[in-house]
Length: 287
Image (tube, rainbow, N blue to C red; front, side, top):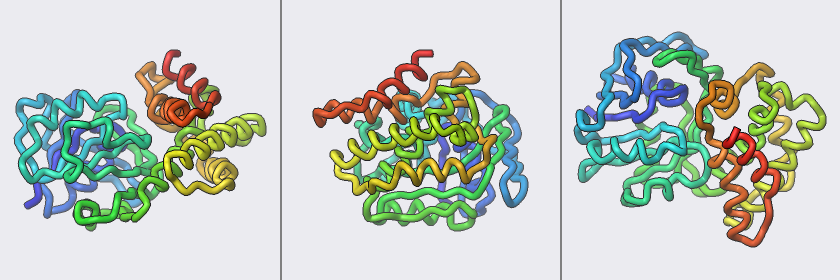
């Protein structure tokens, strides 16, 4: 039996954990800060309920075959405390986080055991262990033996997990979507705010900065991406609340740096300027 530890049980971590728990091939533990007894995830295909094994102290953890890190991007240090106890000589680590800096957030990990994942799992948490998965979900990981092994972990779930030979481009395309989502956090409005023409123009401008910097980093990004991102938001549920808006409304730290600040930081490295993403990062992160 494959031993799996999911570090972080927020909306995405709880959803991933719920599907893995229902696979008889896997022995799953959830590593959390706040304990809960029952895990309940309402999915598009039904409700998943379980009483998972919960660990709340890193010292109580033992080595596993797979660690799936699903903490916020800014909490890499907290996840690393768990990794100290969960890692064995053959442990592989999947990092399910926003942004394009998956590997650099965990410099102590050998690169040959790490699987960075691009995650599209629209889910919202209302309480510890209580989550609604809004629609079908997907993940993209780099091609190779580790990527294929990660895909196999989800073989018995409806989450569409695929490999790609150009993970860099896929990651920057996802960042384009995420950076535009700052419009919700700036206006304190759900995704339907994209139907305001001026907000849509702001979102396009944020994405164009992302495209400029992504190309400098080596990603193959099309000029049409800005319009595609806006149309994607318009096609989605108008009442959808993304994680950065949910965190800001709740007074929690946000991932503004991983979603917008990174674009401004990398722009400076290439002698470029990304003032709108810099502004979004500063306003959302410091408010």
